[in-house]
Image (tube, rainbow, N blue to C red):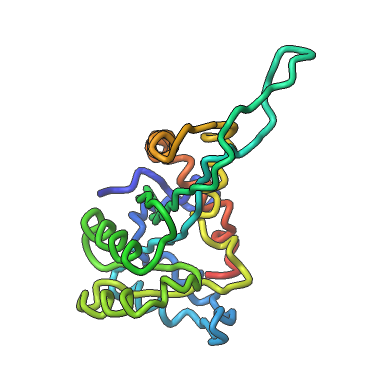
Length: 230
């Protein structure tokens, strides 16, 4: 799938990049010299290896959606305070998403996301993204589970995993996808049950996916183009 987004949108020289680590990013990769969450020095060697192998970069993150509405300011007639009527239920949906340069992919699950759900999502990514992948995510226990490690080991090198530093979750572009979803796509939504919540969430995520300029904005908000972390 060819990318319709150019680096020129961010004030850099226009050069089409389909999400695969490109030779035009040597300067960025060489600038990586920050300790990882596990205490190791991330000096860019993993990214240089990914560049050589032509891997597609995929940032992954999880979030939760509740039957209780995400309350935001809204409009109403003067002297008529908006009232949200909802059940005081604590049932939640778990969402996982992976973002590339040009698109994002998602899955919703009832309950917590653990090893089996993560493996299912990685399989989903591999069906939609040909070639080798560089997966970058946080230190969630499920990411380090034996099931996930065994699955990755069985992919014959197609998946490479890297962990974001625990002190910098804002480097993950998916964080800004969740913010957009909750604050702008699903504000004040009062679902009657998880099925209705899932319906609204899927429709909202599909709307966002049809707007590549938003996907580009999520990357820009992460600060990865300031040549400080990559």
